[in-house]
Length: 161
Image (cartoon, rainbow, N blue to C red; front, side, top):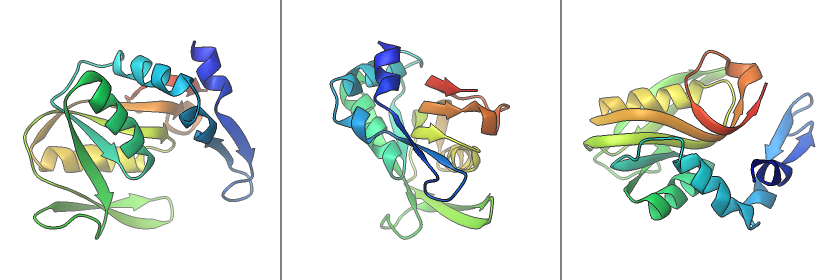
């Protein structure tokens, strides 16, 4: 099953900039293997009270995990997208900074995204979730680009070494 899921992920050369090979999940999302990917992802973790989805494709996976396995959905959004009250965290990117925001809460949580590249956003989301009152039990992605972040502890179903 994992091979069929991986076959639905297309690699787009030189997107969004020259030298980057983008992992396009569009075909997977519209295929019968999307549900199987969600099941395999959810089986990787101890089920939480909340699935925290990172904007924007993390919302897709966190929503599906929430529906299939139970637990609530919490959105981790870019600055200015959540109404108050909320808390924010500014973090460093490769070329500048960004800000994530989240609603406060409590309970166990898994942070979810589609692809883990360098890990900056994932690490910021984890710090922000903890600051907001959640107990982060794990981080979960569909695809881990390990050649960019080999030292991060994240669960995934597809790894690129």
